[in-house]
Amino acid sequence: LRRVVDLFARADMILFAAVGNTNAVAIDAAIKFGQLGLRSVATTITESSTSLALSMRKGDVLFLISNSGKSKRLEKILHAAKQGGATAILITGARMSDIVLRAVNYEALLTTVDFTFSKISATLIIEVIYSFLLTVIPHARDAISGYEELIQPDKEME
Image (cartoon, rainbow, N blue to C red; front, side, top):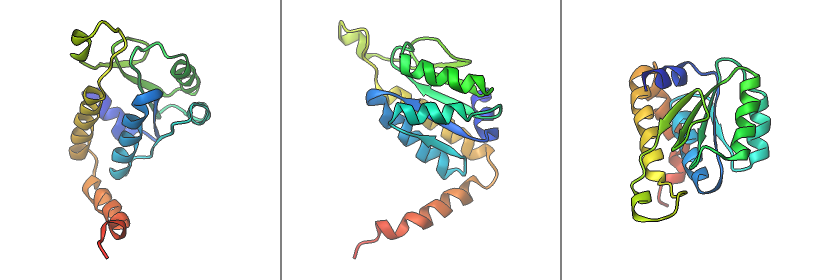
């Protein structure tokens, strides 16, 4: 976890990639880390993620979220990012990356289906990384305040 926080804090760019119902977790993560002043992006279109991954270099971080760790689409994004030297981090129940953060899934105990995956455990992992980064990144609170000021007009009642 310390290594992940350090990679995020020093990253030039962070690409969050997921497919299917975990896209919501990736998008939420990109917004959260962007609020800290980190260049982060997520897209629900696999082709966009692939083209972004092809532009990744050493110092960039690819953060994959996968139920099985066997998604062919995420695997292509992973290979594209690795060609440029990016570090890959994966939240999953399987292994295919530089760093694997295993998500606990008690839902699997209640069903006979192998592919159940709770977004709650993946979101919790992202929240923990975010909380650690808040204490590590200089001016993170200022970045969050700047973000809040920009979106404040959307929150005001008329």
